[in-house]
Amino acid sequence: LSAAALISVLSLLRALQTSLAHSQQALKREQRLSRMLRTVSEINQLIVRERDPQRLLQEACDHLVGGRGYDLAWIGLMQNDGQTIEAVASAGEQVDLTQFASRLDPQPVQPT
Image (tube, rainbow, N blue to C red; front, side, top):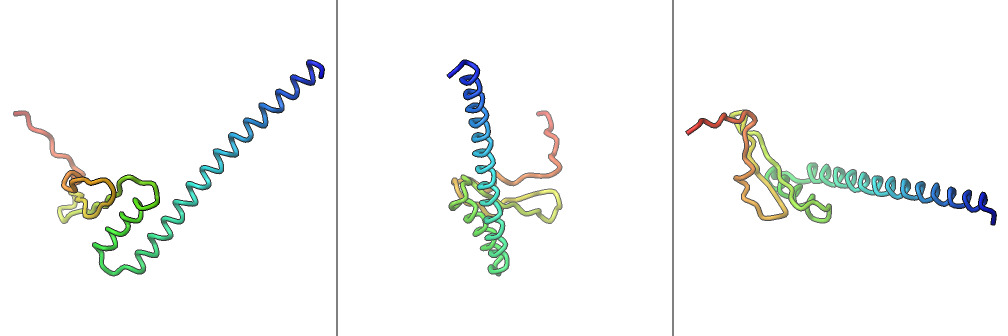
């Protein structure tokens, strides 16, 4: 092969490598989006099927952790004061749910 032909072959191989890398990234993205859509669909079915609100929230968390790749899922509900969000269901790593209570209007810390 001449030097020009060799350079052309190398350029073609680089272009193919780049194209393959982009295709692999697109495939991974499509698989991730497909899993997300399937998860949303399954949780929608759970919403229609489950009548107990607490069990619904717990099963949604369990579903996200079990087989969906999440280490931890939690759901918080707004409390009557309209400012405090308190965790009411979780799954995955053991956590203290009281650590997940927070306020939307953080109270300023007073110097001591």
